[in-house]
Length: 137
Image 1 (cartoon, rainbow, N blue to C red):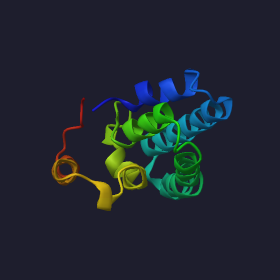
Image 2 (cartoon, helix red, strand yellow; image 1 turned 180 degrees about the vertical axis):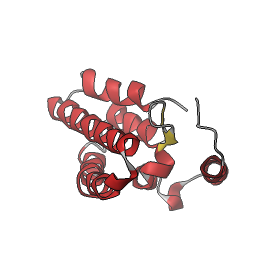
Image 3 (spheres, rainbow, N blue to C red; image 1 turned 90 degrees about the vertical axis):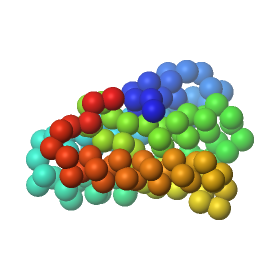
């Protein structure tokens, strides 16, 4: 799995044929950083984390999926983002932003191998949550 910094950095900095897409990727990056900051600051900021995730990140991600469906490079970047991990926050995007995976890999379109990988990753996430050791990629 790639760290999300690489993936979102490419979406935000490369010329993929759309200045709007670059701007939106930059905004997505900013909001993901806001979530990470809130996660590290205090558990009391759960409301803020949920708001940024559900009211800002999710609608923008879904809109980008629809708007750039014909752009192979942007779609590849969004798919990679959905299976990334955060080296700063120590979490997988499958856990923190599950809607990304659901949007980029609809269940009815997943291969058996991808579904098996997703199931195994869910087990890893549960094991990590029960472990006292932080994830280091």
